[in-house]
Image (tube, rainbow, N blue to C red):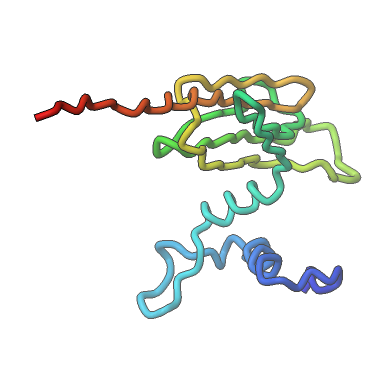
Length: 162
């Protein structure tokens, strides 16, 4: 296994390597026989590959959370920023290879295909104040924080003498 060559033998690396090694024809789905163990679907494997190959940083600022994602070669129309299931921030895009009939590739090293990251947002994230800016192939998604709740003042009860 490739992970063992670099001394990365932990279970997470083993599972990730297993997902990346599944050929498209072996991915589970409707074609699996009833008695066979069904593996991950093709869409799941594609998304797992996209998430593993998309570098990102997450920063907590005093008033916001910032998600900085490398999206090389993508324009603003190729990038989608969505909120799913009320609190899951999904950042995705797809980079396609330029097709020219008269060009023959001698080497293809740049990554093509789907880019994706998913984040579960914390309770204090303001779902109405999310902004995204893409500059020089770096997407910055800012999620403002909700103001902290007002501390409850103790209620004073007047004691009456009987």
